[in-house]
Amino acid sequence: MVAARRLHRRREREATRRFLAEGPQAVREALETPHLVRELFATTAGMRRHADLIRRAAETGVPVWPVTDQALAALSDTVTPQGLVAVCDHLDVPLAEALATRPRLVAILAGIADPGNAGTVMRTADAAGAGAVVFAGDAVDPYNGKCVRASAGSLFHLAVVRGADPYQAVAQCRAAGLRVLAADPRGAVDLYRCELGQPTAWLFGSEAHGLPAELAAAADARVRIPIHGRAESLNLAAAAAVCLYSSARALDSLKERPA
Image (spheres, rainbow, N blue to C red):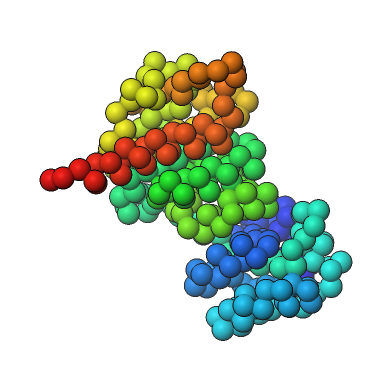
């Protein structure tokens, strides 16, 4: 229990290569990956409410530890804990391994700092059919508790890459046959007029500063999302959703065309 509590700190997560997955949604998805969950802590109410997950853990040999509400609250970083917290192994992979599966859509998060935004982008990328999310440069830890929750289980569905140099990530994606597009409000190419019918890696910058000019210039094109109203811009998660789904729609339309 003490060792699990230390996983709130990034340094401890790095040292042990483990993290906390909180709540029934995250625990359910984690249990679907063999040998990922190391132990599960549950309150009496949590065990009763989510008996199916307790059974699943027992069936796969995961130790289940009954704990008090107070003890679980110490493991949780939410205001209202949901009664379940799992200790999981890290699941990130090298970029070369992620690209070896030939994904048609990849999201590169360059210097993204906000864990809620990063987790939401993971969830959106998963929904849009992306095969990988790359945490590049000085990006947030994908195993941050808020990031894990915001991903709503998608952390366990995607190839997650972290620690990649953003310029090397661009080069490796291009070498793997992906066109690299930088989401940039000052981009020369309008998203509505951009050719999206080929495997694509979208490059997204930080919430506060966007992409560095040099990194944006390394992409094959800098693409802007048109703003029709008076809003200054879209936030990162909204912009990523528009870009990723635009690519997904274009790629799907190609599959639907008659040969």
